[in-house]
Image (cartoon, rainbow over all chains, first blue to last red; front, side, top):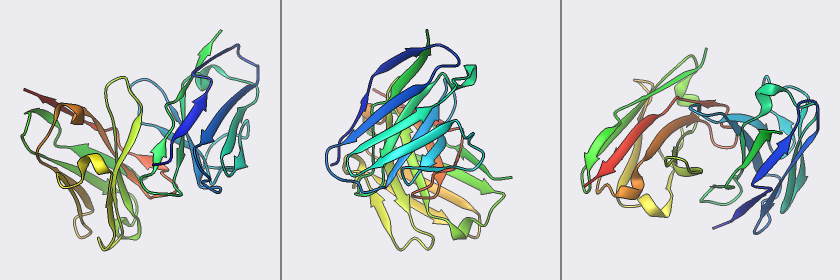
Length: 107
Length: 116
């Protein structure tokens, strides 16, 4: 199975700052990489698919980049509603696997 | 608008069975692959299974293979997950989601608790 490793586990930032979240795959997943946001008590929400394409309705402050084994989710100008847990997920090889998550918390 | 509503969760004894359902509306159900994903309490996400539009292509994660069966009824706009031989580590919130590479719509989940 492909192991997805996210870093850091926790990121403490202030509103208005820029967040950079990393995701590394144990082998190449091409550009078959998605990012999800999850808030407590809610289902995950798709932010980015195909590594860099924003899902419908996702603000432009969210951007994804990378290919192969290294991926980044950047959030510019953090807003209060952005503090949540973020997961990356590969859909290149079955079983499709998720990273363990990065918790973005208010500093 | 797209809606996915899971049901059928609950408390079940170890070794027992449960059938989850996911009722879809607001889109042409038969046009989309469908997916089950679970999340153990306080843990991360695990892809359980997916099923193609005509049920001709189905995949399971290894930990549920032989115990879980995914199916769909396109006439009823419904997705199912038949779970048997339930184990303690199957305890999780089970979500259905539309699609395969773009999981843009999720239900709110149904909680399955397995306990001896």
